[in-house]
Image (tube, rainbow, N blue to C red; front, side, top):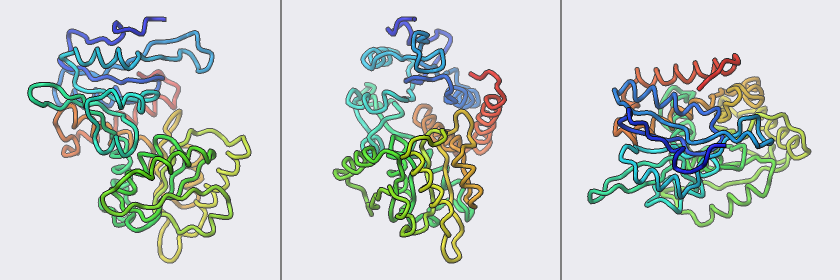
Length: 346
């Protein structure tokens, strides 16, 4: 296996700017082609480079499993690299990298995870700032696909929402549903109650501008009857068939929520399926569509969070250029189609 030292953090001489994708495994990431599309359209001689090397000794993941350099070596390399423009940060570093950065945005602090590093100039020096653009991806995926055709939050404000899962996606979704969508309550369905308890414990010390929607754990099927109809669901779990007793019970709760009458003249809402690997159409997406929900694939959130990263790194707001947004969507859709067809992808 190649060394995990600085030699793997390359900065090709032919490039003017280098962004990185830091974490592992990176075998299925759509981030590099997404950013390549943007850089090419903007006439930038930049690239996003995945930072990982193959570890063929690991039996725990279909080979080749990948590993990325330690935080200290990664940060030392980018801080000495005059071409560095920014970095995506994925698992397992989203939380552990935070204390090592110069500053954190409100999003990173409130969500408790960093998925993006960008540079801020202060007194002729670079400040390495951590933020979280996953929340922007979730926000825009929901608002851009609103049932009423608007891009406002009227469909969500003062109505409950539901989150499936208890990890990093759940935390980003909580921030989004509170701060930007104005939801009244946030229900969480998850197979592991302890993960939700951790979220609740973290949440006690947080202060939000405006209303702080209550988080409620839904762990039993009979609780569904008492729930108010939800306007939006964010699903952040892998697409595996339920096997354990807790997984089977959780799936039954999800089905009950999806099939619950919306009440009055209200339509069923939106379900954002954040899982898009190995394919964007998951079992939960199938259940939601059959129950009358509008399903939004997770690639939508991927795209919008990537556009926010590009804004931070290039200084250009890509969202003001509809033709470029559509080009990025087309590239991501093509990559997904290639993957589903079993073809090799980058």
